[in-house]
Image 1 (cartoon, rainbow, N blue to C red):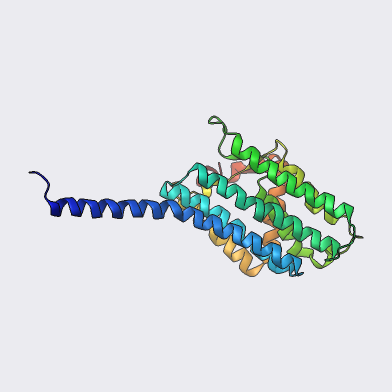
Image 2 (image 1 turned 135 degrees about the horizontal axis):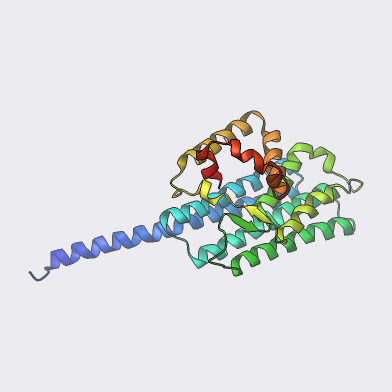
Length: 266
């Protein structure tokens, strides 16, 4: 039967609703990316005002937003070139500029005097973060092992700064504490190396089909941060920093793990 005006109107409305729904789902990951950038920008502002702990908390929230936007994009099927570039720009703010400025304000104690060591170390962080993100975006190898990143990811590197601020932020202030620059330089250089770091995408992916590992990890992290936040943060940050060295040493112990846990971590 030929379509009537009523059926044509109904189909038009249905098509508009479906199109609106698709656009809303495609926009959802970008909202999390925008939250990532907002927290990073806010962290820069409060670092300048000397609120170092708050700045560290905000960068930590940026890490959560960064993990979530990728998971949401894969869940709704909205992985796009625009989303990839937008995520990298947000990461440069949150994990490039914000940690560098946080470390610099701690080292210089908010003073405007000439501080070549602090400037050089913190600029090296920003430069390495930018190189790391640009290399990640332009190096697309379909045959590469998706379980690993080449070079330390910028959120993981920023986690080292955050854990250090929470653990001994009061002892990080002052130009006489040159060891503080190692907290910046070591993760910065690891970002641009060819050392492989575990990505754990399979563990946090909503489509992984293995929710038990995700649920167990989330519960452990919530309990750890609730009762022992500083210790948990340091174990996560410095454990990931040293993972390329520690994993080969503890690999023989993997035989003692249950088969399901080994599959989730593989």
